[in-house]
Structures are given as C-alpha cells and as structure tokens.
Image (cartoon, rainbow, N blue to C red):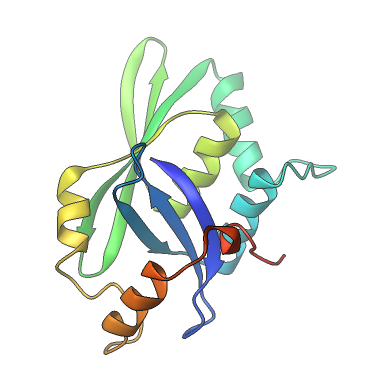
Length: 157
C-alpha cells in the first residue's frame, strides 16, 4: 500500500490517512490523531526537524541497537479500531511489535519500508461503519469517492 493522501474529514475535522493498493483499485481510510497526522505530514513533505521527533527517535533506537525495520502491516480491525504490527529483525531474529497504524505508518515512512494491509482488514472495512460519527457512513463514502486527486495530501500543519 501507499499513502494516497492525508486529509481532514469535513464532518469531524479529524485527520484521515488514505491508503491505496499498488494497482489503485482499493483504498482504506484510517482516522488518526492530530499529532500522528503531523508526524506523517512532516515526513511526506520532507520537513526536517532540528531535533529527532518521537518516530525519528524510535527509528534511531532500533537502528542503533542493530535492529532492522522490515515492514509494517495493518493487521486487524476490531470494533472500528485498526491494529498494526511493526516487523523487525533484531540480532537475526524476527519479531512483531503491536502498534497503532498511525505510529507504524509514520515509522515506515522514516525507515522507507513497505506498508501492507491484511486482506481480511480490507474486506472487513467494507462491512463496518468506520466513520467516527454513527450515521455518517453513506455521506462519508460519497465524499471519499468524489475526492479530487489534487485534494490529497493537502493536510494543513
């Protein structure tokens, strides 16, 4: 998956990461917190901070401990909450660390590693109400479908 855009939900004013598969056939919106959206936007826009931010620090700690970030996977969707795993190799041993998707994506961008989404998550996302406000699913779906590609990535910091 790639990040198609980072936008603000006009109904809730919450940031949304839009992930898209490599063929551009499927998209997955994930609502995130303001600070996580900031961290993702800074990396997308190649903004360098004078001191390491939290996701930069995490990447540096993993690398300094001779670990390697291999990939991140949005692995589950339970009760309208997405879950992710950060896959690492440390001392030659693979491991998976539980993470919020927003943190995992911010880390993946910094480490330049692939972002994956389990098929079951994409399938389940089609059948549940992902809109933070109940009753807005149909309105949100129409809004997402009608987005102009030029609007993507215009997240204001």
